[in-house]
Image (cartoon, one colour):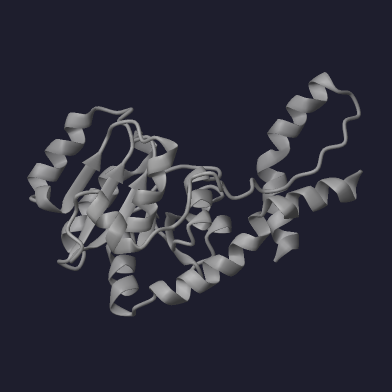
Length: 229
């Protein structure tokens, strides 16, 4: 629904538009969602990516990607992890902007040391595709948010996405179409993970992601800019 998409992105772009008007009087401002980030390389076979990360290709992997800050809810995801199917593990790829020991202590208390794989060094652009290629779904259990650059990377790699019902995330991820929109709590996360695997939804979500991401194309944004001239 491009009309509703436009209303959403106008809402979250208005503050930027107001800033522009401070410098350029009577400026004409149009709004368009940020296009898909397409400079992180190509999707590669899942098993090859998993082996490249020195992980076990017999396991299933979910991906938490990006800087680790409290509002991103990694603690909720870790709390949910013991209730995931036994062969499902978590890749956490991003630098800590919080106290790393808090998360490591939580992992230890939950007894999931062997199911959480931290890649906390800086991740160069040419390695990003390994993490997205290795996972079945990208999980963003944010406690607050507006939009999400990580979701745009997931779209580039045609990956299903789970987000929490905060800010603009539900607008980016149509529920049960390209992934899940869940409440901000561990039980809601684990219920959706069980549904994803027990109902074999990956292939269905991927096909919908491929269709949904067309609205985030660079050519679509260019067309809107040219139309508004």
